Length: 256
Ligand code: IPE
Ligand code: IPE
Ligand code: MG
Image 1 (cartoon, rainbow, N blue to C red):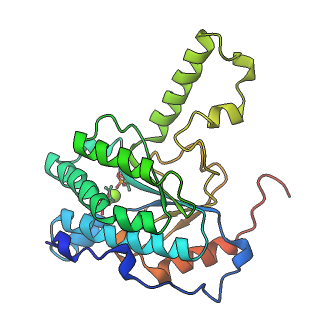
Image 2: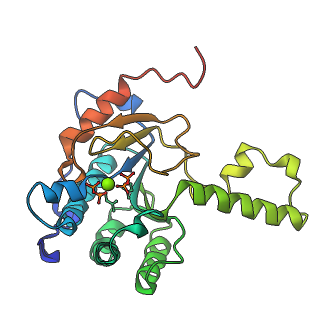
């Protein structure tokens, strides 16, 4: 099993030059990623699934560094879904500990790299110590001017929509908002992603062609790139491929 000591730090890596085959003027502002395939990556090596999750952290650090170097404004990653609680208790608690350990280890570097961290989802059921660290991370990076890193933890698109509807209903009952004035903008302001533009590009690794309850509202017009690469193997080549694919698309938004 990979020990925490070999989790390299985000600051150890050098700046990656902007790829020649990409148009700097047509980069996505916001990339969303369903980081899938950790378990299969480990299984293919005869290792426990947990090793795949640890290896997946490295892929996330690489992806964040590249997105930051290449001028992407926001990276939103799916770390744990509302459905992932149905996994064996051991795997769930391993993941919670991993999130905490990685956040603890990386926070100083993330701060110095100007990364603005946010956690999207219903954070209430998370372990108390993880919640405290999340609060500290979000608060201490809130004024940072670099890339936004949104980590979806106990996130479910349907739950997010229901919570937004509940809040609007409450405000309406209190007389704060007229139901007929609830439009798309007002609704979007109640979502976890309130301050973020919608993702331009969704990447899903491990070849699955579904969105698994991720950003149901926000992905309305995202370009979707599905790769067979398993998340722990996702690297500079894989990200560049996704971006080349993205830049080859004609985005019409319903127009002609
Ligand atoms: C994604 O990898 C990580 C999480 C959902 C936490 P998986 O654990 O789903 O890996 P596979 O899909 O079983 O290979
Ligand atoms: C989606 O992956 C959730 C995360 C990547 C955190 P899953 O592995 O949970 O999705 P399904 O079960 O294949 O749809
Ligand atoms: Mg999976």
